[in-house]
Amino acid sequence: MDNLLIVGLGNPGSEYAGTRHNLGAECLSLLAERLGASLTRKRWRSLVGFADLVPDRRVWLVWPQTYVNQSGQAVAAAARDLGLVAGSVWAVYDELDLPLCRLRIRLGGSAAGHNGVSSIMSSLKTHEFVRFRVGVGRPDGDGVRYVLGRFGKREAEALDKVRSGVVDALELALQVGVQAAMDRYNRHGSLDCEEIP
Figure (cartoon, rainbow, N blue to C red):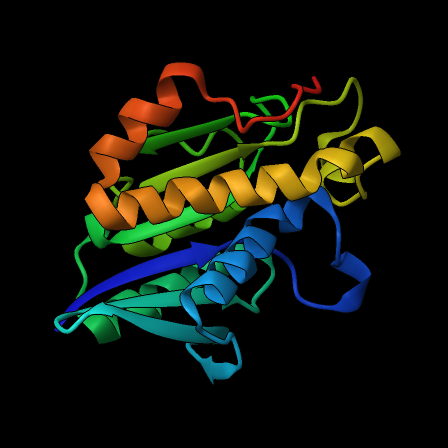
């Protein structure tokens, strides 16, 4: 069985629902819905679901319940148990360096200040995993308060298109490969909604 792990970053608990830092987990939930999976199993200190896309390929969907800045503990445990190389780990998360309605896909790179990504890099002992970086925009002030805050009214109106667009990109990558998804989405990066800086 060929395994692939898709991780959606976000904090557990109702107090964090709808915050910018949970956008990755929200996209993962929508992907699970489209794939007919359910994020109800508890494994690897995470909520877990899976879908068999073809007879010999299983996609594991994982939302770590360790809080974002310790996500690597859950990711490393899952990768170890499934015998995965880093390139078979995809992380979906909020990105301050991109405006809302933009997506960038890349293999490897720095954490760019994202503590969840830093944790994954540290736990996997490599940066060579696939990142789906979902823009949330950069604030003028405190970044921590910003990502733990909820979207404003204008931003919230775009969120359905953002989540749907990210999941479209994930499904494209699942169907035809990460490089094809990079070629399509990195060229313009738009998720079919008006960019909000």
